Image 1 (cartoon, rainbow, N blue to C red):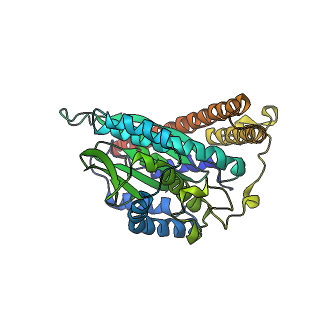
Image 2 (image 1 turned 120 degrees about the vertical axis):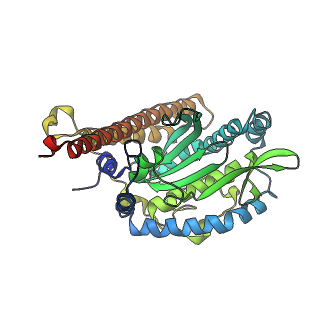
Length: 366
């Protein structure tokens, strides 16, 4: 059976570790679930991912140090975020400003990149950061914990940015692991972040550091390009060593130019197929099938909008309207994805609970 986005998402739900309904998680079950998920990663992507983890751990700090000597391209935007950060009431507010600055850069990169990637597996969707609050009801005195989280997704891979008062962590993982990631099932020894930013004091001011080097707001442009490139390199399973740590003056990541040079864009540019409602036998379709069809229709709509946007002049009302339209369609797509993720998570949790009840009831067990 060919792979499909929402069917894979549904299937991955059975690997989720239900920590809420089990006081003790069976270690063997956890190991088997994580191994099953990791087997879904293509070998090429796995090799690039492993290489990136090593390089980000060893070389990003040095790259940031060298970058600090360069002059950022856009001082106005950086200064706006920097001023807001200097007035932040607490660490969590500083986290939000740092991540918002990063995702503002991601927004521009996504727009440029998708002009080349629409219709292929590398098309990037952006989920704007939001605050997620959780409370441990089993401990009455434990306060609400807050995280600020956003993500970029291709068809098969996600890049997530998650921050709290103590750190900002950046993760790369296959989309099948999204449900478990959102539920907090994976500790760092299972799914380690590729980068971690930590709060620090430098020259009498609060800032964020990566591997001991400052990751200031002014560096968000080049840092966003590096991270965006990481997602594309892993998702395509292609990487040229020269692509890493390029000068931010080289422009936005583009297929076949400064990101995933070995990637053949034409090989995966399959045109979405039409699925007229009147020709569909709904009795043979599941919710995941229906969402996959909707996803293809959204791809087709985005392809039309991007094609129209390519003929507009930057800065004109037509270009601004095209961006708004793309943003609206993207927001719709992410709401569908989020809704299906929640549905899959809750449904599998209910099924797991029913199976546990049957196992404990001697009458039902017969």
